[in-house]
Image (cartoon, rainbow, N blue to C red):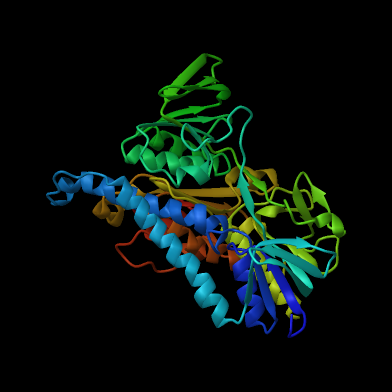
Length: 472
């Protein structure tokens, strides 16, 4: 380039890549971004993940509330679902946010965007193959932020009609009348919650003994119980095969008790996790190491090749499980950008990463589960408080679920907060701050919370650690 080399070139413009690029530019680094997706900037999260899914979930929330309008004194007759309109709204939201990254954030921060497939030619050169040919980008540092893609299962390759992943289901033209979901993690449960409330007959098949298996066991059990009111939940079940039929699919599985069963449906959603995207990067031209498809990094997100970093879904950190979450990628990218600019920043504390599942009711958590805290040798005290005991959940008509506080018995430090209930994905923010500041359960309980509000539930759960919850 005419003005010399870049300080950092980020490959990928998802929630890790674009956030890292903006922070690098804010820190005075000359920054470039390479993006190959013809749909634009934003990565999986924005284009075909978090954002479009939450747009559909919001419609599902409204649709469900309107169907019960009479309870609120609202006469709402002839309520129906316009699937084309809701998908169009989803597309508009995605397009506006994606264009905002390129036309506003990148231009405002003087970030150079190269559109096309990026590949490394050694540690300090990125070749971008775009519509107009190849461009050579000289750079002092490279940040790999290429994200992940849906995994599939043998014999269940997506065809966009009968068998889909989270990518294809977001582009449907018509709503399926019936749906089988394989996988009861956050992705599978969110889509199950969407389409069940839209009126589809939904069944979820999960190999592990409970839905949302990464959540606290009590929260997970409550989620399974509440979700089972609107869909079939089959846990401890092993999928044994899928047969395409004239009506859609027939899914054979063995139940938790060992019984051979099958379910027929118009569509099958395979939601069994995600795989890292490293194709076309030419990493073999560097010293970057790969493990089972993931880029190996240390806690500072450094690869084995000096000057090359990796963040987000594409990485594995010293062989440990790495959360595939947009906010994790963002914070990892910010850390790398600031360190490149000479600022001292600490590695991410993965014990303080919040989880959020936007089903109904919502599920969220941060910190150690009760089981994990005990595994690590902590003597724990636990406080639980039901949303239904307070006024605000009753007022808004969503009072199922509870908040659970896990505290260390001797010093009272809060080790984890887990919840299922209304707006849990928003309420978890207070718990995130509490863990960051090493708060005690008593400090939370003595923090004055406005009344009547939903956050009072966390306050009273903290009080319940000592058996002092007022409204229990």
